[in-house]
Image 1 (cartoon, rainbow, N blue to C red):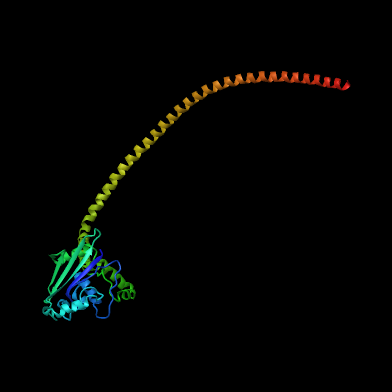
Image 2: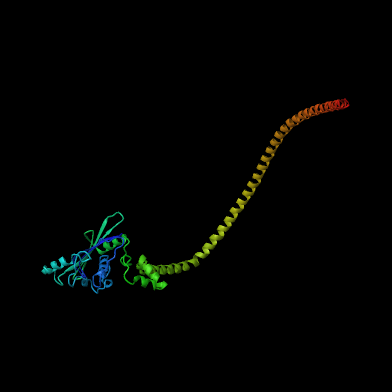
Length: 318
């Protein structure tokens, strides 16, 4: 959920109502030392519910403006002259006159709906939370942030100066702790340990009671097991006899079926064989007739060949 803009009023070095934004996919805030770049990071952390100890302040009331007014408007200072004139002409905006400070963060969800998160702090240190211009409790405020994957305790929304180098130099144990903190599982560690201790105590009690009752129930269980084994053995013997009988009957049934099928097949093949034999005899007779004709044809051919030879000899003689 991207951040659209930040509005601050009398927060740290920002005097009056200041609008910072709109923020794009990549936005760079530059300026000399003391221009308020770090205070902008503190403002984002403040509106998202970060404690004062993490905002470079000992108390929340120290976040209310206590110094000279900075030029409001665009960060490039184009309206600085006009703002300075307004400051000089305003008697009620002098040093230390701010009674409260607030920061408003405008986010946009996937449906392009704007979410307004506002946190107000007074000089007494009391905080007020507003969600979409409605006063809500911190629990509801934090729940709304969590629903948009903004985890305040894990601080997964900002990377401060030196964080990358600090993470890179951490040991595996420290990295594991950091991952648990970012994922939110570290918050449940204490509750998990309590639940684990309660589980262990319950397990010990259950084990003790079970051991105490096991001596009495052991013999009863043994007798029941022996009785069950005997009944099960008798039942298995009966099942075995039934299965043997069924197996023999099954074999006899299929042997009889095979005999009948083979007998029918033999009869069918015999009828087919008789027809084939008759057909074979007919073909044998036809073959003999053809062979006789072939013999007669060969005799005629030989006779004709003799005549041809005689004619050739007569021709040669002539």
